[in-house]
Amino acid sequence: MLTVVEVPQWQGSSSPTAPRLVEGASRLAAMVPGAARHVRVDAEGTLAETADRVRRALPGDGLTVTVGGDCGVELEPVTAALRRHGDRLTVVWFDAHGDLNTPATSPSGAFHGMILRTLQGEGPSDLVRSPALSPGQIALAGTRSLDPAEADHIRRVGIGGLATVRDDAVLYVHIDLDVLDGIRSVGYPEPGGLSPSALTEAVAALAARHEIVGLGITEYAPCDPGDEEMLRSLVPGLVWLCAASRPSQIERRAARAWPARHTEERDGWLLRHTPGVNRRRANSALPILDATPSIQALESFYAGRAMPATVQVTPAEQHAELDALLESHGYAKSGGTLVMTADVDAVPAATGGSGGVERVADQGRWPALFEAVTGHTDDMDVIRRIAPAKALLARTTSGRGPAVTPNVAGPGSAVPWDAAGPGSAVAGDVAGLGLVVAEDGWAGLFCLATHPGHRRAGVASAVLAEAARWSREQGASRLYLQVVEDNHAARALFDGLGFTKSHSYHYRSRA
Image (tube, rainbow, N blue to C red; front, side):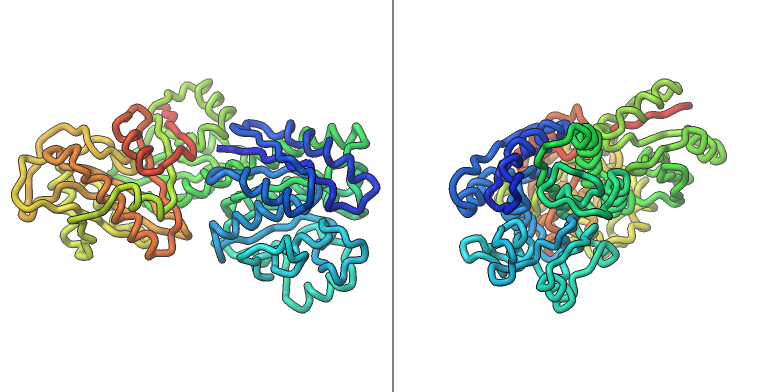
């Protein structure tokens, strides 16, 4: 869910144009497309009082776009992201200025020139928050006007630029509009900045590699109709990139968690093919974020492998134009699926326990367990090739149960019941199982299935609770899973365990 938090704070600025920031915040908020929620925070009173109101307005999940107002509005959104993501968070600070002064070094005494230093634990006492950002969690971009004390701090503590962002980092992106060259509607314009296209390209490059967990856009003091026209084009594109980064990164992880035998990035696609396997996930193309996919390249790839050209349109919400193009080329739609996410710590509390769930360390037992619950072992070739950390979790029973019937949902779809067809039981009966794969702070749940003789007995909940515990041990803080859109029983289960929708996808295929 996309939330806009509008903070018309101007009191942190020393610019003569600061009162215009109130109107600027309102205009920026109106430029954000697709917001499910818009909160306007009262900015009267002290900066500390406004910060407290901002903290209470922040949502618990989804992308938050904070619009100011002066740069000081970033205090609580960045702190909230730091509390949530810890050492994995990097704050990318697109700003002409460093905002790295302290009350003792600031020439103006204005808080918007101290905000990034305050986030490091050195600022006005009533505005310092815990935890504090470390210098290694900051990347400056477009910075070209520094006070001597700011330059000294950067050299002393080693704050870097975009090249220092770790591969596994999640990002909070701050954009002070004075990072742009030639913009007049800011308090302190500086020459030599980024063009709107260069800023968009920089954010696109970050979104292609990282999940962006927060976006702040600040310091708009309207005075030039040309600036307004430029921003009406720029802001929606920046928000689109940031909003698409999370689903894109989930799908990238899911592609590695359920690996195709052959993958290739080409002409706007991640192309996947697995000979001998009929699963669409392992034999379909993913569109690459902020690229222009080539239909000709797609069809050539799959024609050379005697396979129907199939696209996993994901996230569906971000690829409406591609979806329409595929439809116009005769690609039929199928397989509507939701991707849901939850905090690792929330799931065990919601389930009430994971009794009887075994972490099956002996992978030699896995085929028999899959046979017992699903009636087949078709997915074992793919499962053996999973490179990230993985675990099979099995809920066992005390005696031999009834004949087992297979789950027909396919890999990657969490369907804890509804199956058809005969199977066979094995010694040490298993009531249900699930596969969990962890990588870079996320853990994906696959092949979640329940023996039909143990439906409505909390089997899936127990497996999910143990999956959350195992995931936490692997350093993952969030879970994701896929569920077929019309499987209302499964969706109700996941809703009750704290999972919420991240995005959706479907397939388009041409015979």
